[in-house]
Each structure stands twice: as structure tokens, then as C-alpha cells.
Image (cartoon, rainbow, N blue to C red; front, side):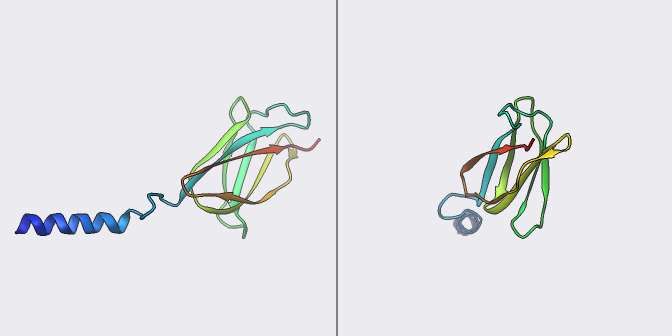
Length: 110
């Protein structure tokens, strides 16, 4: 009897922490930063923040100009890149979707 009750409680607990659709609410925003000529920019800083301007996070691009924000809460974000005194326009309301990967390109101004 005790074993059956314990099994039930464990199963019930798992049902509470595991969303019914199997998604965790987390997604990935990835992409690349390029210069005005379309060439990849290494070591650029990419900043992401919620569309209300809160919770900023930053990362750097790799040697191929690639970056990724992995396991981010789904929602709408604004994204911006900068390097050596130049910057991109802010991309507004970029969607991160649960269980998905969103790809973008940020172009630095002249």
C-alpha cells in the first residue's frame, strides 16, 4: 500500500512540473552580426532585453560573427549589436518561442 501511494505522489508531482505540451517555455535566439558590407563581425557585443527595457543580457559574437541566447523565457525582446564605435538599429519585439530557435541578422551602421 505504501509503495502504491508513493508511486501516485511521485507521478502527481511530475505532472505538476512538466507542462502538458512538453515545452518548458524556453527558446533560443541566435544569429549573426555583420558590418555594412555584409561581412561577419567577431567580438561584437549583442544585447537583449525585454521590450519594456528591463532584464538586459549581453554576449559576444564568435569569429564568424555568430551569437546565441540559449534557454531564454519565451516572449518579446529588443536586440542590438555594437562593435568599435558602430552599432545596429534595435530590432524591436523579436519573438522567442517555446521550444523554438529564432534566427536574426544584425547589421552595423557605417
